[in-house]
Length: 195
Image (cartoon, rainbow, N blue to C red; front, side, top):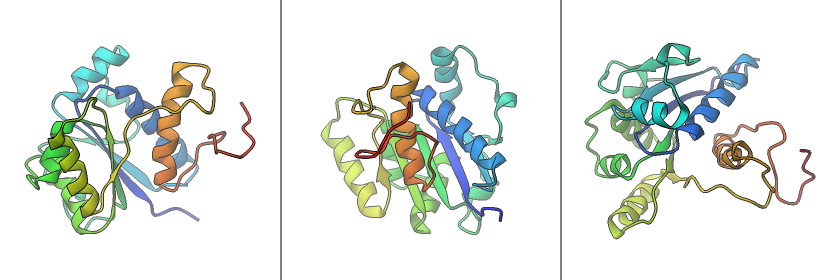
């Protein structure tokens, strides 16, 4: 049986491109196994430069899902009539979070996020900023009250990660879990962990 789960992955210009890279790779594995139907990608204007700086190169054509321009309001997930079930902004800058919290909808990412909120669908913001000021905290409160989930990119260490990739995956596994997906060998507190 083929899944009907369709997910939007948005990448803002915040540091943390590796989180998006690993998340996209896992979603592609889930698509190949028919665990999800599809995913769509959208990058902010700054995101490709940050990705290139942090990961060495950025090749839009090498990405496994269709990529939409951030000014493309004809993208299917710009409308509530589309069949997209969830959206993850990974990483999410505080600037992007602020625009969403204030309902600006002036680009595809903020518009799609607004659609998810108004349609009561899952919206996960993988926030990448520290320290936080009061404006950030109030924007998180606004979005939480509106139905979004704030998932800070804070690696956990109780699984005893042995590498940077292992630490990154502690965040990616939390994202997947909140999408009701699960990567093999994801650490679960109180359960046997096979490394």
